[in-house]
Length: 391
Ligand code: SOE
Image 1 (cartoon, rainbow, N blue to C red):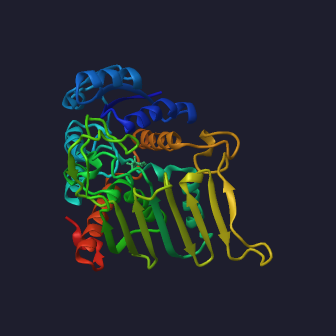
Image 2 (cartoon, rainbow, N blue to C red):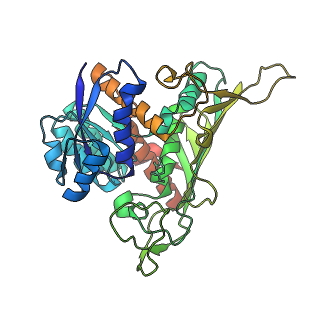
Image 3 (cartoon, rainbow, N blue to C red):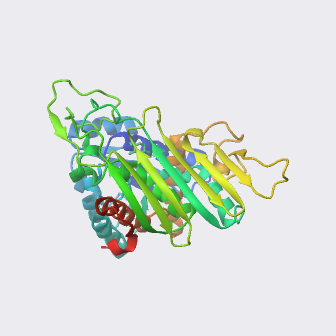
C-alpha cells in the first residue's frame, strides 16, 4: 500500500484536528486508499514546533516552513495557519509539486484565493479546502435526497452558524478580529461554512443582499501568540485594540437555479455553541440539519399519507454516506474529529485515484468571491451580483 508523507504548517487547534485525522483514517476506512506518515511539522519557534512534533506524532520539526515545503520526501503540505499565510505557503508548495490541503477560508480575498488557484492548476497537484462540515454523514445524506429528487425542485435554503465565544467584550483581540490577518470576521470564519453548504446542496449563488455589524469595536489585546477563542479572558491590564471585522452577518441569497435563501452568522449569540444549521424547502418536501445534533437528519415528505405526515428523524449509520467506515450502529455518536477523518479520507482518495478532491481550491475561490460580494453588498446597501466581483 502506498504511503504519503505529510508536512504540516501550523501547530494550533487545527493541527490537532488534522493530525488526529491522518492517524484515524486507516482505522476507519480499510483498505485505506493509502497510508499517511506524519513526517514534519513547522511552527513559529523551534520549541513550539518540537513540542507539536512530540504531541501530534511527527518525525521532525522546523521553525522554517520553507524547509518543509522544499523537502523532497514530503508529498502533501497541510496548511493550518491563520488566513494571512495560506497563499504564500500554498503557492510555494504548489511550485514544489506538493498536493495541498488548506484550512478555510482559502484566503482573505478572492484576488488572493485566485493566486492560489492559479498556482495549483499550473502545477497540476491535487488541492482541497477544509470545509469539513459537508463531510458529516447527515449532510452528505441530505445531498443524496436532493440528487434523487426526493424533495423536488428546491425553493429555499436557510442557513445559520451561531456561536457565542466572542460575545464577551473581555475575550481577547485574537487574529480572528483583525482584517489584515483574517480578511473578514464571522463571515469568513464561520459564515463560509454555510456558503459551502448552500453551494453543495442547492447550487451556485448568483446574487446577495447583505448587512454586517461589529458589536464590540475594541477588545483587550491578546497577550501571547496562541489563538484564543474567547474561552480565556484577557489580562485586565492589556491595552485595548481595534476590531476591524464583522461580528455578525446576514445575507439574502439568489441562486442560479431560481432558488432563494438566507444565511446568518455570528459569534456573539449567547448560548449557541456550534449552532450550524440548514433548512431546505423543496416542492415535494423539506430537510433540516443542526450540527449540534449531527447524527440526525430531519426529513419531511409532502406525499406522506395525510394522517402520518410530519418531520421524521433519520439517524445516520452504516447505511449512509461513509457509513461503511464508521461505527456499526446508528447514533453511537459522531464528532468533529470524525468529519476531519472523512475529509482526509476523501483527499487521500483523490490523490491516489487522480480524481478531483471536493471541496477544492475552485470551491474555495468561488466562496471567496461570494464573501467579497457579501461585504460589498453590505457596504453599498444593495443587491450585488457575485460574478461582477470576479478578480
Ligand atoms: C471558530 O469560530 C471556529 O474554530 C472556526 O474557525 C471553525 O471553522 C469552526 O469549525 C469552529 O469554530
